[in-house]
Image (cartoon, rainbow, N blue to C red; front, side):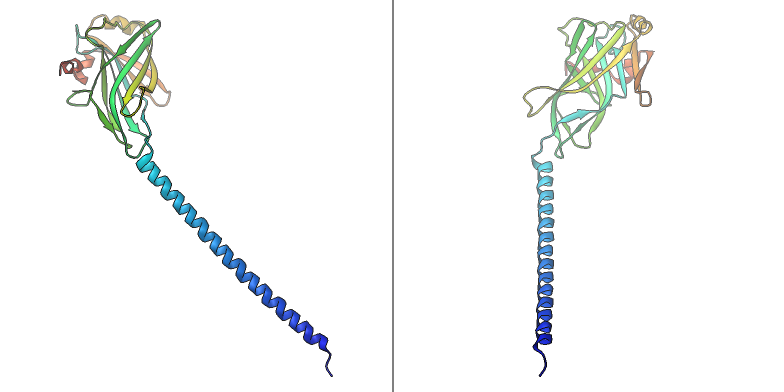
Length: 231
């Protein structure tokens, strides 16, 4: 009569094998379900983030380093003082922002002056009165003049701190877009006494500094911004 021990052992081995197989399939099934759940959560997160970035995130407006800055008369002898620069305005939100107005705050030593008249464009120049700024940006020339009722602001030698402020639709307070500075030399300031000369400052990307040079009738080549004040 055969011993029952081998049969019992075979049954135990068979049961263990089937159990391990069942556990393996259970773990595989749970892993696939977990992977599917994680993928679904990631997809949902991406969708929600995309909707937020495109529809709900308001973002703000920013400005790049001006490639050129100009100090001097607007259009030759006897013209009002003007600050001009060229830069890119861009929105940090996908849907863009609406710019209501710009103004420039200038400081040199203990002297300060707000240039409240904003004129922009390449050709022709137009009085600033709202601008849509997309995510891809708008690059153009920006001219700033002093209001006619305010006192004259002569450009003397020294360091000029330039702060560009923006009124953005939907923002309760004006925001500081950019702050930079230029150094007006004594020789350049003397040349500007002629009232028919202006000083340009070209930005150098390698040295990250402005270099100045004087041109007579310089503002005329960039348009007469004061012609837009009455318009």
